[in-house]
Image (tube, rainbow, N blue to C red; front, side, top):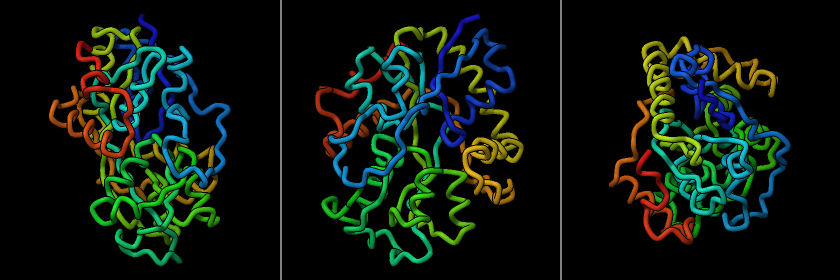
Length: 301
């Protein structure tokens, strides 16, 4: 049995991993999973004075355990993984697209004056820098607002933390994932703009092609089961946060939209999309040293 150390994951980004673990699919492929807690000991305070990504760490949460030698594999948003593997100290590389196609949106309270994306000009939005909804926020808004008028400030990863900050008026707008989009809507908040986005797996050199193939066989079976009966797995979104946030008890599976849950088989990153992502990252100065897109991917795995 091969031991594979994974950074912990939440359902909105890693539902297939959680289902594969719970239903014995990894063990069937000869893999024993050891979960490494990437959230332990993190400061979850808002830092809205940090408005430039260069003043924030790339390894706040995702990648932290791998960089310290405690994890072999993690999944996170594709954009953030471009940034992390550029500065890795352990030779980590992206090895393929993850299965979860993540749904997220920019949310405001009921009392907000923002009704449409254009009205976010010069309105600070709290985002978890180097996490998926940071980049998604920029991509969603740059079609409506000139780049220089998009204003962000750093808040922690974890929609549970950001939702609380939104409701107690620490921030005027923020990005959320499920189940907190549904909870926000139930409490009268508005989704101003939303979209899906991809993520990737990042591996250390301890993960060879054979091991990653076995891992993905388990993931593909989990994807098949979830997509065949989404409702049977929606409870994961509520169960994950139940002990972390009593407000989640307001939600039932009936409050969650199955249309927001979408998974695909893990696969290589298409070359044209890889290049476009690289070019977009460079245009925002998110990448500093990587001379080409393929330097950030393990093409062999």
